[in-house]
Length: 391
Image (cartoon, rainbow, N blue to C red; front, side, top):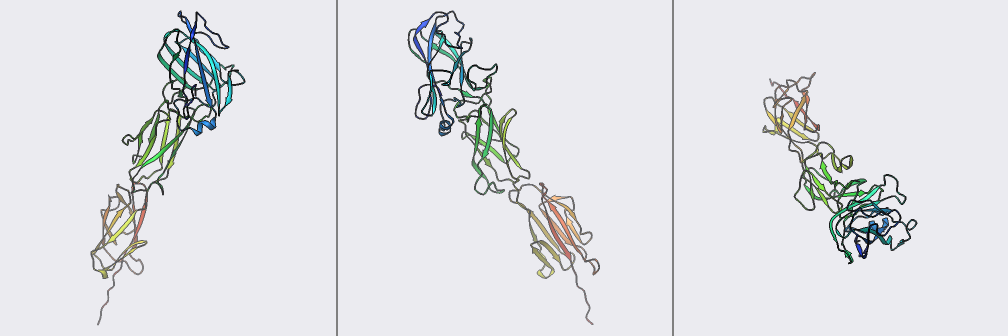
């Protein structure tokens, strides 16, 4: 964080000194003046770099300065970068204290008038490699600098560069259950910069060029929706920065394949898999025939007929399931007739006892029903008749 520290936040304050210098201004190692014909004023500012422990103890701050920041660049009005060392070993104005590295009385130059400022915080210490690792970026335009006065430019928001992501979804007690809707399940995104430091905000996620890189929240299953910052649920969501918060909702509809909840941008993706959300197929067997003509067993499912031409029904259901069921196959041949028949779909099937078997070939058979997710259930049928004469 940069200059003026508060209890739980850090302000990036840039103070322009009253003095001025024509042309090059005050030179510091690795620092060049902005290309301008206007007289340059001295810019005095401080940088506070928290250590990782203090970062994780803060929930939010007004900007992002990585705990692994070791140098920075300041570009005024598109000019040559002015480079600053930000470690005690490379800059005598930097010291460690209060859980942070504090670099004070840093000086750059800027011309009085309307200026733009670009800040880039780097992982590497000086001397910088040809392509230093950028950890956070800010661009501030149309800042008015008056000559001969101390100019307080206020708070600048540094935007974190995304390096890696991890995703965690808080499931309801007992997990997501088919037939039971659930909402307000928190989605936690642990974002880190390219150095591996935890990102806190606000600000918005950017890439190394400073281009905004919002995170897309998606699911491969439509029963799941997202709400960002309390907005209405949607099949997808957008998190622009670490200050955004999102929740996941589940409609209760069965899902026959694993659910993948993802957050990411481009090739940077984090995800969590939720197991298949299905309940077993339930079967209800009934018949309007007299009790002596039919026998029903519920575990396992069995429907026994003791005379022909009578009927029964097979009613199929599944908690949270809104699809159809299919009569996949049957071994019943001519003993039992089904309506609708094999290959047909529905939730209610009529079964008619057509013919009894013999002592050598009993009429005992099985029908297999399935849902759209590939789950199946078997029902056993039998047709038994007894005939005798009394003389």
